[in-house]
Image 1 (cartoon, rainbow, N blue to C red):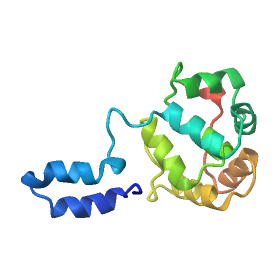
Image 2 (image 1 turned 180 degrees about the horizontal axis):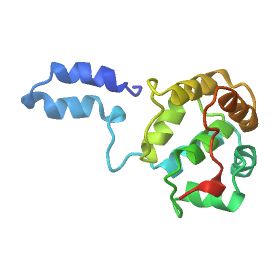
Image 3 (image 1 turned 90 degrees about the horizontal axis):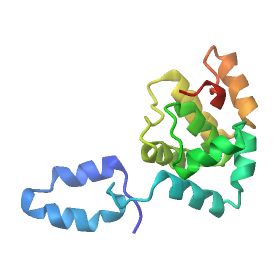
Image 4 (image 1 turned 135 degrees about the horizontal axis):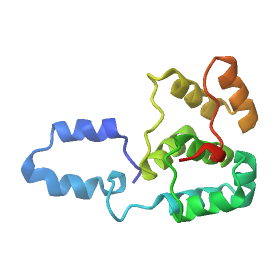
Length: 154
């Protein structure tokens, strides 16, 4: 069974009534967010392992201090800067879908198509024009803020 999209689940819910709730949860358990859902840390570590990327390399490519990156992935440290997580996702070669899921797991807003900067980032995650420096150049060339570095985190 594969994970269903939110819009797919919304469609199913429109036809689900109270007596069918338990069956709905059972049939869609792989798509549901629960306390036992995989954590951001586990999700990222598993993805990086699948892609045969070391955390050290990802932090280097993301231009994030290695020690800080390890603390973020272990859950020892938190950031409110979505750009830091986006840097890690981009450097970790995550797809747009994987990135959106990582943002959800980290409890940060997903990239949103109605926000011009987010829309451009969505395209950049799909097209992969190069390094983080290339991404920032493309953002700056369009008058948008580049992805912040970890030096500006809260």
